[in-house]
Length: 201
Image: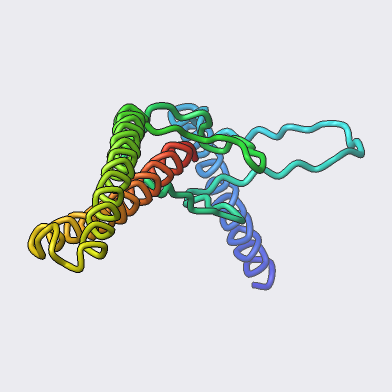
């Protein structure tokens, strides 16, 4: 009876062992079939790059987007209006103190200078004319006054004396006005010349 029991147990153990061996064979066959019919694609292959270790400088490149702003910025302007004729520098150019950066078209400014020169010349000519006229009016007034005083107010008449006096005083006023016009024309010419000089930045 015990022999039979032992044989049954041995049979069960053998059967169980065969079962495990068969199961392992099936798994192995399935693994081979998967490897054959479903090979790994190239993209899934992992490649390793190796190199010899050396000492050296480490370079790090950073890419980023944004606005570049200067450390120092200076706004420049010009005191006269006009059209830019020439620009002598470009963005990021190094400039020095006193260097000309741009120039305005000076055609109108030069014409204005010439016009002011002509106006000054006319004003000076008018002043000369006023000086001559005043000199003549003064001579006439002095002569008339002397005759009027010597005659006791009888000759020339009071009206004639008053007219020569008024003409003399008017000539003085005209000369003063012509002097003012010369001063104004001279000032205008000076301003126009300064504007012409300011046509460069």
